[in-house]
Image (cartoon, rainbow, N blue to C red; front, side, top):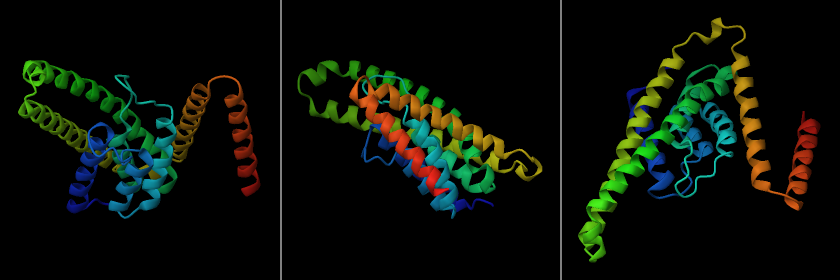
Length: 226
């Protein structure tokens, strides 16, 4: 499956949007992997591939608690890249391709967030006296420049991520008889990450009991529906 120039432009635009959504604007949960990757698949005409990528990367993202100045992977633009990869490869390796592209990109995205925060901090320091005196123009400059930096960061990540996804799509996956093992490994890692996050966030006492009840119920439902 090839990627048209229009689809390339649209995925870069969508990647920039979801990157901005994470911390800047509009913070409407567009940056969640399930949304970001599914829309990427829709742009390429393969919603199923995008949805698979979104489901897999969402498992890893459930282990992330993005609050305050904590360091965490950025799964927003990474999910778009993973969705593109999953949409362009055979269905049996879609999950594996999404992880192969999305997980490293999430780590890189998290690193760029730290760089962005430091650059914004420098910008604030330069205008601190003006802001303290109530200079509205200084506040506007901070907001505008911060938004532009984040947009540039997101666009650059989208460009790199989509480029890597296109390279992954060129791999002759049909020649690898055990290629689907990659998908199983990525899925297993995602389940482990999601479970670890759930246990950590459940804390102690009754909440862990309810977590156990939920897990047992889910397993029973999956077994019955097979």
